[in-house]
Length: 123
Image 1 (tube, rainbow, N blue to C red):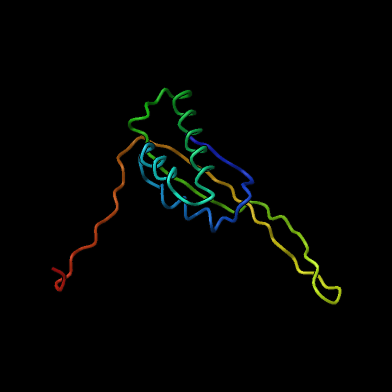
Image 2: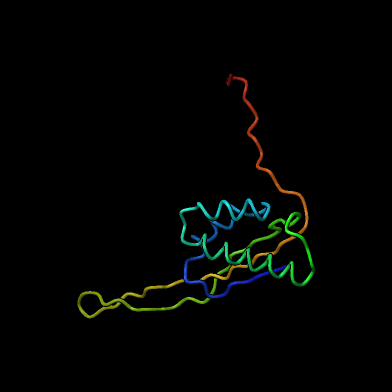
């Protein structure tokens, strides 16, 4: 119940923001949040989660009801090195970073966000 996307052309730092949002959530809830998220990485993550769901239903005959995003990771992929001309014949290097996205689904309960404890001064 895994899926992987290699060489996604966006920096891992930006993609991790989306990964942290959907980690530990149920599949319908994660897809709903990705649908309305205004980040570029939301669409590839939605496709990747749908691919992992298809793998789970085809290979292990698991139902969609109990599936949860068990683990999700974003690692650094190969960096494309480009050059930009500067003044007086110099060049500066431009690093075009790539990411590798991995999603693993599991059967379990949904992790809910912790509510902050009320302080003594709050009413």
